[in-house]
Length: 357
Image (cartoon, one colour):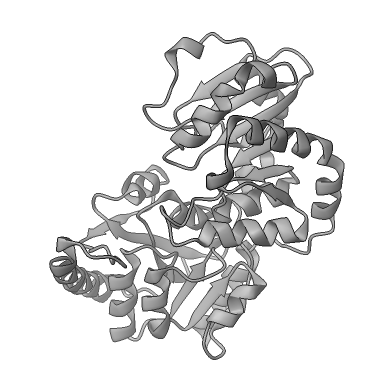
């Protein structure tokens, strides 16, 4: 018999969902019954139902910082989402709500506030996203990953917990990763991923450098849906995938070096695994600049190298990869001294404190 009931929310991108998965095993250990509210059409629906968590779909509108005709209609979707969330919360009567952000979380958090249900939110990036900014007045606590983030949280709501990291990410098998890619030599492995949707820029520049890189590395390349290069399918030492899920821990364990975007969830996984990384953040043209701030923080701490999109050329990327290889021991040594913790236990404690207040 469970002791508490929690409803989790968050969605729109994998970054607003996968941290919830990191919490689920520990929540169950602490006698929580878990349910989830998300968008019917969002990525969260598939991810959560695959993990045998009851899922409720609601309406949600995207909140934009720029002009769009949908800015006139989406507020009505948010109001509808609040009404739907109120019905769900009235029926389910949870003890606490945990929000990982994304636009679907806003109606849930507002509805919970109306029902006087405690809300704990988590912000992965250094500065709060728009959804968490709107949710903050209705939250009891806002957990953050970066110490600098506390400067953006009003009053005593901010709690430095770190990033929740999935246990399975830390339990990969190097040999399984190598076998899955058909690598049978002792070359160091370069693992490249451009975020959940892939990155054409990163894909193109890596492939331009492929011949010279393969002299030094075996390469695992997560290139995104529709971005497989058929002409390279049988290239020795080069294995490309559109997307991976269950193989990811094994690939990360096998990797000696990583090239990646700079989403906060991912970079703290790299830190936990002590992987020297070249971070290529999304540009301000394609984002609110949060990945740039994340990258600068990790570069300043000496955990990773950084290369902005605007700087990328075939030659510059190759030189940065060589620098990453040369500075391997230095970067690992810096990561060994890191005080960063897996945030799972800290977040669970914040949830329990909010219930028992």
